[in-house]
Each structure stands twice: as structure tokens, then as C-alpha cells.
Image (cartoon, rainbow over all chains, first blue to last red; front, side, top):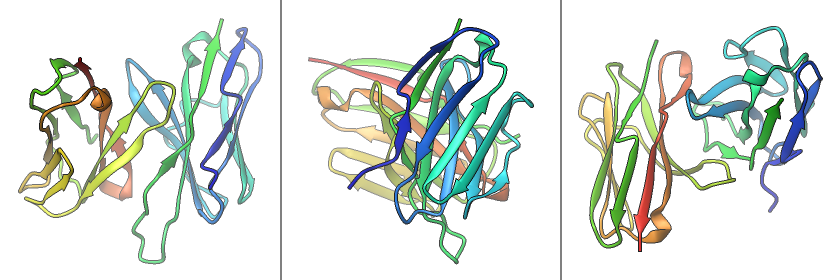
Length: 117
Length: 110
């Protein structure tokens, strides 16, 4: 079975450019999470969706960051304009949230390593 | 703000030795998870503990949730080189938010 798919795996861009990261969750999962990982701050939750609806975006650092989930099988995280301090590994994860409210295991993608020069 | 502090940050030991890493907080968590992350990959869930005092075993790994549900430990018996990785704890706190610690980077020497 395919796991969570992220693209690109690596992205190098110059300050000021727009960056779009893509994620395909596991089929059948109804929750999708975007995380950012750095050595200094560890793994931080940026935003999560349930049934394609953004539920909590309090972790999104600033207005330069935006995320969309147009359908159950695709999500994007966009940074515009990008800055050197955005350099990090960005992970997408998906899970199944049941009616009981208990979240099933989160399955992480391999991540996108972003470098902003 | 709920925080999870992991210690030690780094640990390098010889194959065959035992070790314990810790995950501590001043806050109560309804559940706590341990993940292992290898270079170039995303974290992979090892275990979830939900009851205060709960102990779970996964082969040579023993996980314990503190009685007050504020802390947890991971003990590895007879470490192997394949245990090398970043070990992350994550707690489900207020508002069902998942909070991650910064991790313990473990290196097992052959």
C-alpha cells in the first residue's frame, strides 16, 4: 500500500520566491496534518484538516503561509514570499478520525527538505 | 503553553548496553505517543499509552506512562545498531492538540 506521498523531496529556492509543497494522504484517511521540523524548534504542527476543512491553523507562522485541501486526496502548503528562516523539513501526515473523537495513528510522509537562500 | 521536555538530547552508547530516555512535562496529557525517526524519513509510531502507570513492551523496548500522566520513559534493553534514530514523544493535551518534544538523538555504536 502506498503511504503518504510528498513532493518535491527537496526544494532549493531564493528568498522572495513562491514555494508550493504537495501531499497525497493515505486513501481513506480523513485527517491531514502539516508539520515543520527544525533542529532548534523540533516538530511543530502548522495546520490540520478534517474532511478537507481546516480545523486548526494556529501553528501557521504568518500570513506568508497558506494551506489548502481541495479534495480528500490532495493538499498543498504554500509559502509566498519565502524567507531563509523558512528553511526546514516539512512533513505531511494523515490519519483517520473516528466518530468517537479518538484519532488513529498518524502516518507521516518522507518530508520535503526546503532550503531558502 | 504545554511543553514536553525530552532528555537526554543526545545519547551515544555501545551495542549491548541498556538505556533509558525520558519525556517530562508539568502538564497532564490524555495520551502519550513515542515515535522513531530515521534520517530522511518521517516519524513512525512505536506505541501509544493512555492510562497512568501503564507499561507497554515492544520486544526490547519498554514504555511507561507516569502515574500522573505528566511523564513517560522509554527503556531499551541490549541496544542494537538498528535502534539508532531520533526518538520523539508526543502528547495529546488540551483541545486534543498533539504536541511533540524535540527528541532524543540515539546513536548505537557497533
